[in-house]
View 1 (cartoon, rainbow, N blue to C red):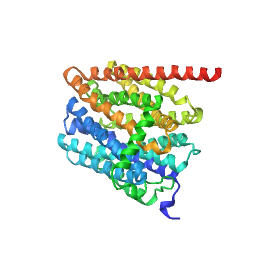
View 2 (view 1 turned 90 degrees about the horizontal axis):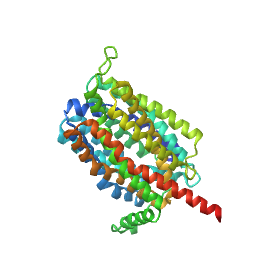
View 3 (view 1 turned 60 degrees about the vertical axis):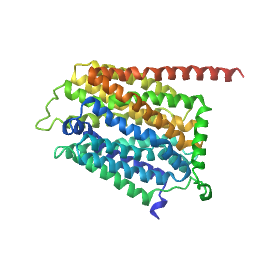
View 4 (view 1 turned 180 degrees about the vertical axis):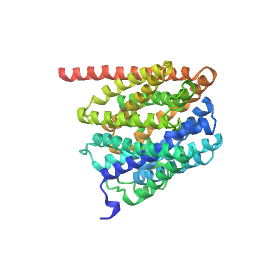
Length: 416
């Protein structure tokens, strides 16, 4: 068997596992690295994320269109190579300017993977391939890989705090190399070479994707929700670790370094997330119309509540539980959103619409991130964390509107 002829589902799951391990090795200690080694303040911490998301915002559409016009497979290989290089660059020098450059590099790399991954799998499996279920399986496998990466990252950090970043980046570079040999692309037909002479085909693909969104009120709503989700995740992702370090004395775990707590928190969050995703797969059909809307509406409300409790709590145990709860909900939400989008979009628009979705998230982070960083610096980190819940209020309203609209449409169908 030629390596390039492997079936798409094993390749997708392998991709998820290795990506989970490599990225978790980096992310488990990246916040501590920036706070303790690079000594960044709250505003600088959020500006790191702002640069990342600005790169995503600027490159999401061009790279998504490339995946629709040329090759999903090539887009993914380039993406993982750039992500790995960017992460390694950050670990090489704990300097604010270098960290910003590293974020830009791996942000561009991310845009090559977002959209292309989901569109590639959907094309390879076809309309009857139960794509939503595979997305959930991939989320579980990625979480399992992340557990391995967290353990590796914690072990490396006890030696030197930058090692998890260097090793995590190297793992993602190796993933890019492996995909060259094992990843198939049978279900996608690239634009004929004679039609690639100008940027016309890219502009046309992008334009048709935008038109598809504008003609479907649910797609417009999903993208609007993602904007507010991006605005809220930026202060949470950048500041929860600083809030914990500033507000609490971490309980001792024998003679182990306190940074081990961050590994425990992330490992526990992933474990709970794997269990919750497994339960959703067994009890809920996310490929059924209406199911994603109900799940996502409930999840949004729960994240709002968790953010407020975390910001106001004076208890270490309660604060940790809110971090774990938020991590669990997010892991369940991501594949459900993918399944929801997949229900609404035709194959020829998938990568571009998924990229529009990612760009909305990035725009929310770029637009609101520095504001939240300024609030954290001028007032308190607690105030910025309460702002996380406030930024999710519009999303809850959109979910309610979609639910009412769906109910009225169902009622009209029953009367016919």
